[in-house]
Length: 117
Image (cartoon, rainbow, N blue to C red; front, side, top):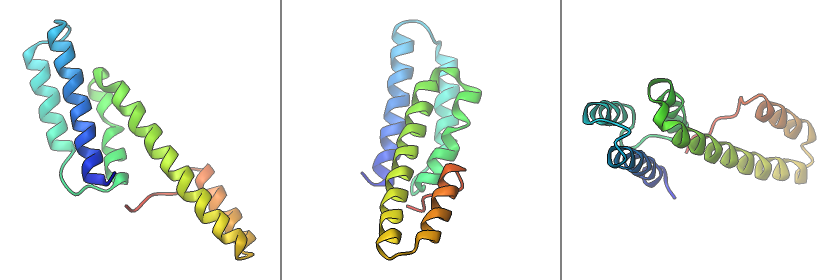
């Protein structure tokens, strides 16, 4: 899934939460508009995964209803970082670049690795 498809998936999940809460009368129309407006201003076409993940970190600060989406985005992002780092470390080890692999692993552990996709 490319970043544009992922962004649309996130927007759909948020829309589903809004729709579900409106039907259950756990949210009013004004709150739904407020969330939708915030999401539309936060997520826009052609964002990188880093940008989507960074934007999502603020969703639950403003709207507790979006905690499940934030948790999923964080999990997806962390899993992709782990996979990417693991593949890169394996390549470095095969090239006998042990010190570089060690540095990369330390950066990953300290959450200093960003994806540029």
